[in-house]
Length: 229
Image (tube, rainbow, N blue to C red; front, top):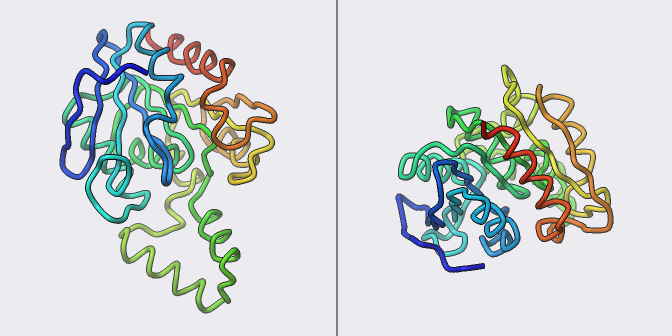
């Protein structure tokens, strides 16, 4: 992947820009992710004439900060749109995907969305983490209350059933059936609740390798190109 034409910090986020034509694709990685995970998608979009932007949210990549959460991920997307303009297509991997849906719900008017290996709600990952570290019922309730206090968002509101209300813009939900981190049923729920969504399923690629898969890259290109007219 070639170096970006521009890279700069902006209000807690860190942005990279590969300058192309008028169409803009904006990409955000997931929890503890890095923009280099898009090393197949960024060049493909740029070669096709797109201006490509990657967004590091606080506490990730080159962005400042020591912690982050889905609300700060979504805020970083709003910052990027303020700095560079509204993207034609917004692409998010894992937690970046649900942050993209949240940002659109909050008013970021991207024309299309692509979610990759994205949970349909944040409650699932929180509960799986709590179970993994052995938290009891009372400790789980405290964890949820703490998260809601810090993010200033009810956990139940970061759920595709809430975020998809009144939605109809095209969304492509990409997921691998063998994803062990985020169950593939998440893609089914996203497409069920988000009017205008469709799924693209892969096999044997897991949670992250699908970002480098030629078929996935082509699916994103076809989807983005179809909505670029």
